[in-house]
Length: 111
Image (cartoon, rainbow, N blue to C red):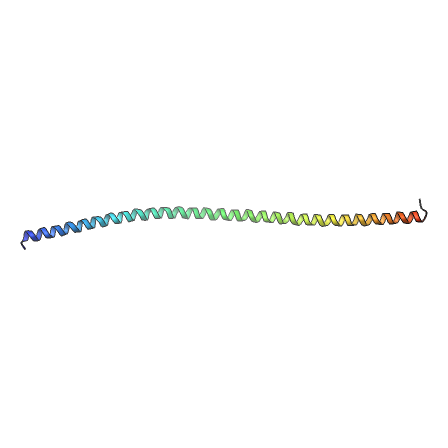
């Protein structure tokens, strides 16, 4: 091979390597953009997950508070019902005692 032929062959190989390197750089740039996009989306997801977590804690606290209120109302209602039954029992007992005393007074010839 002559020097010119060899030089042309080397130039052709250099040109092929340049094309390949250019394609590689373009691919690297595409990957960089893709990674940048993934990073942006992951940051957005992280922020949304933090917001969701805070909202979940607030909902849990509200639900717990609501449940506690319902328990207090239920216990208060039961205590009120028990007191009502006791008052009715006492009044009924008192009424029977008054009736018994009235009958005894009538039998005894009282007023």
